[in-house]
Length: 527
Image (cartoon, rainbow, N blue to C red; front, side, top):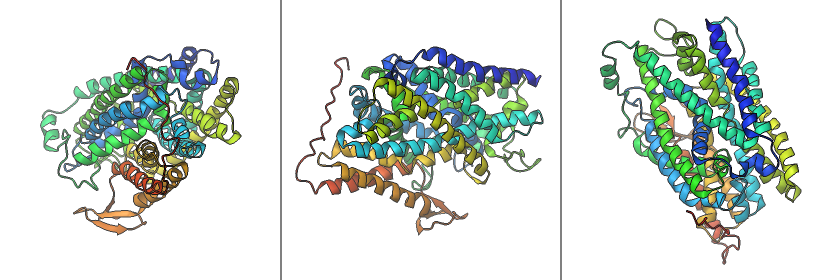
């Protein structure tokens, strides 16, 4: 019967890239390849944004967050982040989005080039390229988890490396031939697929739950959303930590990350882009709630057994993030299992390759050669870099597959933690250009580099006492059982503050306003 599951998965992996190529059509220019010439509807862009930012990490790892949460953590406190995400998107839609869409810019970092100069534009773009490659390497690895579980059910011990290579090839096909239009449409279709798969899972689990499960889940705080008791500095989902940190993180990810900005630019209309951005925040909230609820249901089904402890005391899994995949493969009926796994794979094929290629060509390569490429050359270089970045993602995914056994955090937390090194510097550079009219390019670059260095120091070295949350000091050794690092939602805000303080102080050296301080951006009349 499992042959039916494999047939569904195989059909999906072949059919979805072909669908993307067909939707994308023939690319005629670099602008068409990178931003789709403004032919994307706002609701399609909205679904694409959601698919791009949550994808496989949400599908596989967010249920694990709710499952392993202790009574003190609360099972659904992760939702407080989503409330902050909505607030952050509203700010971006009013402050930064007009600079991109109405300004007809190919990438978000072109704004920095207009405001400060090509030096900061290249610096920000290279930072995005490195950070996005690492984060999406984790995403690609996450998608390999259910496939490995499926193969193991057939007695096939396929390595993660083999799986991520196959996924990378499938992902690159429609990005290479169809451009951003194919990426956005395939994202939207795939998101609807894995949401429907989640509904199927909830239906399947609900029929197997023991009597009294709901009361036990309530007693264990599995439905707690707001956490006002945890320390704000160290509690990842303490209410104000999640709300403020989530808002600033969303401002950075949706205002300074080309992966998201490219999808919004594909509408080429400010009103449509704003609708897509703000609506995506509410869709993300509902999506998080859906997968957290699945985690609670699994906790009730398995009676809270530890995922990685040997049976019968635990579930005997090699990795805690195999929890949801293990249920799908071993406990869902054949056919439904294949359908849900295909939905998880759908999340992986949400490609960042177009964003990486567009930023490489327009923000780095054209700055190096000192001229803009003709549209035909932009298209050719865009496709070359699509293949190059696909190889880089495969290498990163393989690295995380080899090293993830030693990690204590779910993969979704690891991916969000990576952004902490650079997101604050990226968002801070944008805000520096808007708030400090005297700031020049040298000020911004020094502030940017300083922020990345200081954030690495904070993330890797600053430790707090676990029982009372007091600051212990700096220690670059691994955290012990009694110490904990600063909660990751604060990383982006810390980076923004450092960038603004350093850049703002340096700008005081200049007696006059930078002539580049007022970008010529006007909002369309329909707004």
